[in-house]
Amino acid sequence: MPVCPLIFEPIYKPRIWGGRRLAELFERPLPGADPIGESWEVADLADDRSVARAGEQARGRNLGQLVREWGSDLLGPAAPADGRFPLLIKFLDARDVLSVQVHPDETMAAAIGGGVRPKNEAWYIVAADENAVIYRGLKPGVDRKALLEALETEGIEQVLRRIPVRAGHCYYLPGGTLHALGAGVVAAEVQTPSDVTYRLHDWGRIEPATGNGRPLHVEEAMRCIAFESRDYPEEKRSHVASVWTSMSRLITSGSFIVERVRMTVGIDQPIPYAEMVIWMILQGRGRIGYGKAGDAVAFSPGDTVVLPAGLGESRVTTDEDCVWLEVTLPKGGGPGGRSSC
Image (cartoon, rainbow, N blue to C red; front, side, top):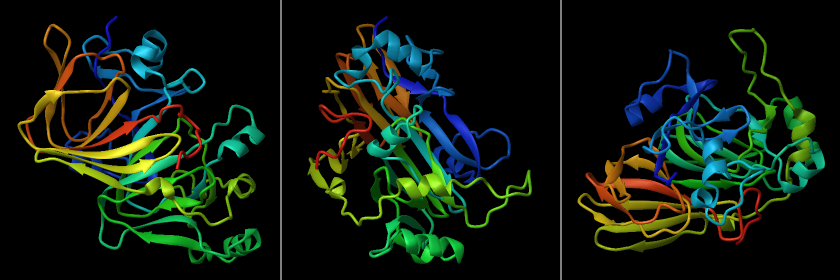
């Protein structure tokens, strides 16, 4: 079966901290009335596999099937993650602050075992309320003892690094980084394919359905937290522009590369890639033409398009001014890879 561009049905995740802004931002209907915290756009985990809704040759097939059947025609030289698609792509809508949490890095995932995978991720801020923040890492000098004391006295906010954010900011969060997405933020999240999260603190939040707090994983989290301070060379930016297009490098890591692309209305040009590329469409509408029969896949804000490595001759046409995030895998890197910076 020849490969084609892919757009998948979103997998919506109700969350106590979620909202309904994805409907407003991306003009998409949301299920039910519950707050939606996460929309999984490209997923190939054991209990959650994206199903293609666009791409004539793939419609109705799940991503796991396509990884097995298309192989390198989909992934190019990238290796699958334990036989699965090597990235997990989401939108997050935080009406309220998320829990303070951590994910295992490569060393800790191997030590824990039992199928636990490392999780490195990046947040691109799509929208943010005035005075919105994220929390990333610990303030200088905060050690294990100081963090435990802060937990006991409900003073954890005093030991976290608090970062004001606005739309267009992008942040790298390697495994081991204690973090929380703040209230009033919508983010595009690019991560390695793992859903392992250890919740250290949840702001005293109560589940309405149970009247209890959500489970915490203090022992596991403390084992995974990287207490040493670090810089983030993965966030070094670069920029290339012409009259009609521009590309800004946002994240360069051993797990994935994230760039922001802008194209003006009226562009009609070949897509030059010989590797798998993912576009998270933030603004504008257009089409991807492919194949000898003149097939095309249309995209609009909120769509995440997977362009297989073996797509062959194809073209992008912009019907409006467009902005998207472009996600690729580094040569020789992939899931859980260490930083190339």
